[in-house]
Image 1 (cartoon, helix red, strand yellow):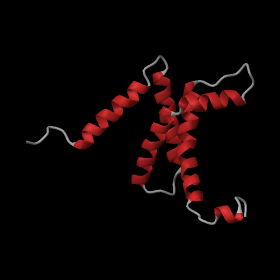
Image 2: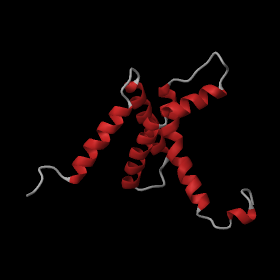
Image 3: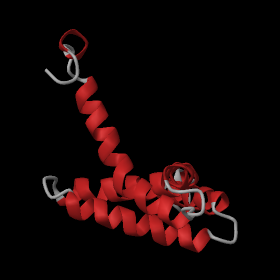
Image 4: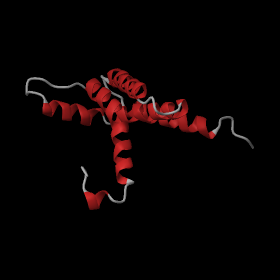
Length: 122
C-alpha cells in the first residue's frame, strides 16, 4: 500500500514543526526575519558556488541562524557596553551570515593534515 505523501514531504513537515516549536515565543517573527536576512547576506557573498549549492547553503544558514540566535545575541551583548544589548533578531542575522562560512573554513582547515606540524600562520 502506498503512502499519500513522500518521505521528503514528511521530513519537511517534521522539520518545519520542529523549527516553529523552537521559536514559540513573542519574538519568533523577529528571529525568522533576522535569520532570513542573514542567510540572504550569506548567499549573496557566496558567489563561487553553483546555484544548487547556494540554495542548500541558504537553507543551512537559515536553520543555524534560527537555532543559535540566543547564543550570538548574548555574545554580541557581552562585547557591547553594559547599557546596550543585542536582540535575538540581531543574533539571528549575525549567526546566519557568519556560522556556515565559519564552519566551512574550519572544515577546510581541519582537512589539512599538516596543520599541527606547521602552526596556523605558516
